[in-house]
Length: 252
Image (cartoon, rainbow, N blue to C red; front, side, top):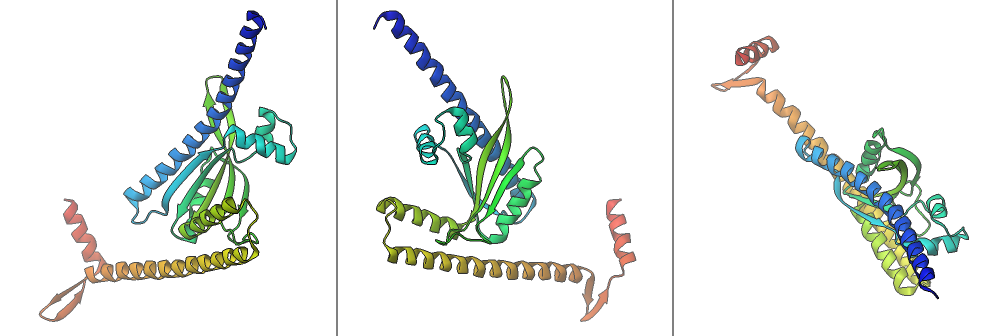
């Protein structure tokens, strides 16, 4: 091979490497956009509300090897354009919550983000997979601005409770260890564990609801107590007009 051929091959490799790098960068920037949005929501709840529904988040970018393997399995053309068309979870972010109601609360907040376009939603909480897997999956298009223009990039968002996340992590480790050939009794135990996790989620949701009702009742009770004064065991209710007058005097 002469030196010119070597130079040409090197240039081709550099060109291909730059294309791959740019391809992955766009998805990385889309993840950065989503993480920023979620951090803003977390900060808002921290500063303005007494409860934050987001426990933690985790993001990941598929490796080129993983994407190639997925194209092979799906029998798709091996190209970057084919990856973009046929693989919707190149960029993924997982949001973990404490309660099931938090999942739908976060989902609604993301739907209200006008620059996001919801492509697809799969609710594996209302309709669990046969093995017991539960989570809410959303495919969203995120606008990413590069030097040569704007691109809409697909990001998969998984929202689940801590119990759901623990079960999914355990299930993944078992399948990885057995290389997908999992004994039947383990499959049955995994399904039973998923049912137990679901029962725990529902119990914790009920406790959360009851505690919220108690807090609301206490707040209402405290508001009523402020409107009353007690002198020598005699209780007086403060008329609204008097309270308004006091408020006006305080402003002065």
